[in-house]
Length: 324
Image (tube, rainbow, N blue to C red; front, side, top):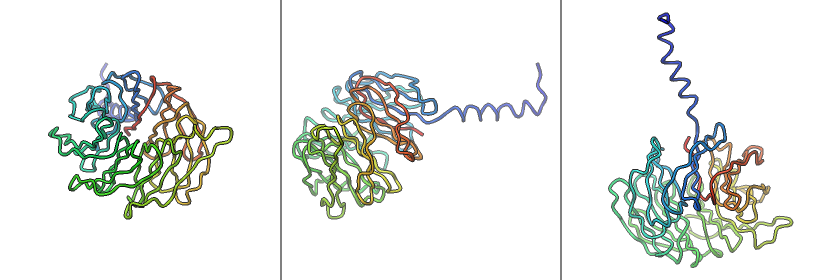
């Protein structure tokens, strides 16, 4: 059958439009007990693929151009790089032992990796695969963040109970900030004036002034009917508009909603069991939480501050990132 000229001309454009409209945002979730990643289509809210990776995947992060996914394969003692076009592991980086969390510098090349067993932060050039530095920090380093302006790399040490400040221009440790027991995660606000640091055993979140590197506010959390020992803050996510901070409270099975300006706790959202880490979608209308013990992802409507859905993934989901 031969189509008229105007239809033949319109078909390629129509097919391209259909293809583009069907290509939506995707969430990648690391399942540390299954050695896999779950891939979730955020249009349908369904798992569309499960990908085998290295042993005990935990921290995951995207390259700036969204073409590659970096994976901390902790028990394989390596950082794997996945090509997101093919979902294939294309190379591995010399990460140091037991990489758990990492952070990518805004230059899209230098990856700062926390090596829990060695009390080190390893800096790797992701293009040349060279180790640029290994920096001594406290005992059991875990959390990592790099400021948006690229000036600071910050690490937390679980046993030393400190935030360690690394000058990215020299790779030197220049300061330490003492916070509460077992610090886990650190997050810079949008303008890099504040750093939020969670303390799992301390049950608190410390807000630190970046210029002075001093704690200016300490947040505590109280949930009716839940023993204080179960309130164990881990992941922290801040909205770009400075309105909210979301804090994952671990075995308390709730996410705290904090007014990021007044530091008042506005609400507690019931999610899955042992909520660990979180990620926003591109416009921050939704927040996704990894719930380790229940093996699922909770979807939070940020405007309504309401949990709208649970998505089953693998065993012990740990990290989550969203590719727009």
